[in-house]
Length: 305
Ligand SMILES: Cc1cc2nc3c(=O)[nH]c(=O)nc-3n(C[C@H](O)[C@H](O)[C@H](O)COP(=O)(O)OP(=O)(O)OC[C@H]3O[C@@H](n4cnc5c(N)ncnc54)[C@H](O)[C@@H]3O)c2cc1C
Image (cartoon, rainbow, N blue to C red; front, top):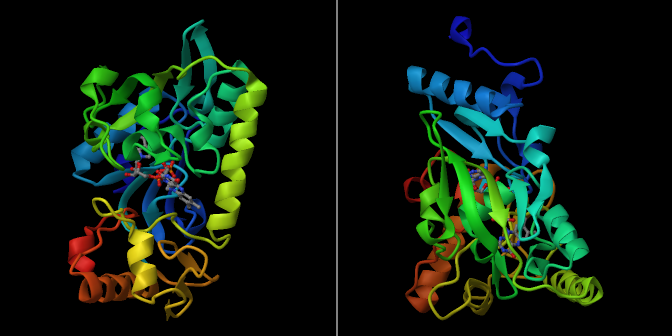
């Protein structure tokens, strides 16, 4: 297989058997068979064509804040948009902000505040990149990522680039289906309204305080389960008496029951076992199956739960 490696520019990073645990916030799991940090759109297109020719699976990993890596790793290609090319953020004109997909959400929130743009405050404290936040339609404190979007440029698996307007994107709860199986390259963003940066900063600080008092500090993938219609997964897990439940080094946080945390050296197998137990206990007490929000790299939850 090595003789057929894609031809990339010198600035791109290419590695094999690359450990992934430290590239996610949950910090578990094995290595990727192939790993690439493309430096340009051309390089990204080349590696997508390469995977297509080989029939190899690929996955674009942002900050890995919503992804659990299995212990056996990933047999395909992991793509990360970490090169400075994917971290550009600048005003295009006086009404839209160009933001590349690798920009961290915290940076985006800070930049919007500096511009006096409200509507991005909720991003403070959500670990991740713009690409992951678009795909997941990340949301908090009443704000949603897609609400700030004018358009998204994306690359399809055949390397072609298109632009979708906001009206062509569905903003579902924790999902933007049009971005499944493609790579968001960048987005044009707009404010909710213009406001004094000091007022925006005050809201950011308030949100930060709220998070600090309600979320655990240990490694996690954020809220592990989606909230069922009209309810909160954390409330159901707490009511089932599961706070503190442990499987090896993985446990249900005592601070927020919808956070499963890694005490340090948890394995993916321990996490999955814990997730299975939580679902079964909650089903036994409520008749509702909780659906994971976090993704299991390269697998379907139905196959392991
Ligand atoms: C402590 C903590 C708190 C959290 N709080 C919140 C919260 O309040 N609200 C919330 O919504 N989420 C929250 N999360 C979850 C997570 O931060 C968000 O889902 C975030 O948007 C994930 O971004 P990411 O870059 O890490 O994406 P990843 O986790 O790396 O990937 C998530 C998905 O996005 C896809 N993706 C990544 N980049 C791209 C791209 N360029 N193009 C297309 N698809 C892409 C991946 O393939 C994957 O399917 C929290 C997580 C943690 C650990």
